[in-house]
Image (cartoon, rainbow, N blue to C red):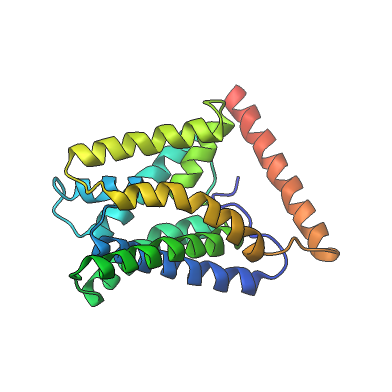
Length: 231
C-alpha cells in the first residue's frame, strides 16, 4: 500500500508551482497577521499559546504541530499527498522568516492594513495550494478523516476542532481579538470566490485514463488492507 496519495495526472508542473507559491504565500500572510497584533485565527492562537510551554519559535511550533496532527491521520487511515508534506515543511519557516523581515508596526491604521492584506492573502494562498490538488494540509486532512469515519458533518467537525484549539490556545495565552472574528467570517466567502478560479482543471483523454487506472490501483490497495485487517 502506498504511503502517499498519487499525484494526479495532467498539468503536473502547474500543480507543483501553484502548490509552492501558495504555501510560501500562506506562511507570509501568517507572519503578517502576527505583526498586525489584532489577534490570530483559531489554530494560530493554539500555536502561539504553545510557545508559553515550548521554548521554540512560532514557526517551529507550527511545524511540530503539523507533524503531530499527521500522526493522528494513521488511525483514520488517511494518506497524505505531496502537498500535505510540503505544507508541513514550508509554512513554519516561511512564517518565521516573514516575522524576522517585517517588524512590529505602530498605529491602528497600519495594523488594520496588515490584517486586511493578511486575510485576503491567506485566502489566495489557500486557494492556490488547495486548487493544486496535491493533498490537503495536515489540519484539514484531520477534519476530512474524522468526517469520513462518521464522526459528524464537515461543519460540525470543523467547528468542534477549531473551538477546541482556540480554547486551549486562549487558556495558554494565545492572542484572541478582532482578527480572530474577521478571519472566521471572511475566509470562507473569499475561498468560495477564489478556489474555483485557481483549481487545476481535471485532465482529459489519456491523462484521465491514467488517473482512472491510479484510482483503481488505490481501491485495490484499500481492499487488500481491509482484508488484512479482517484477519
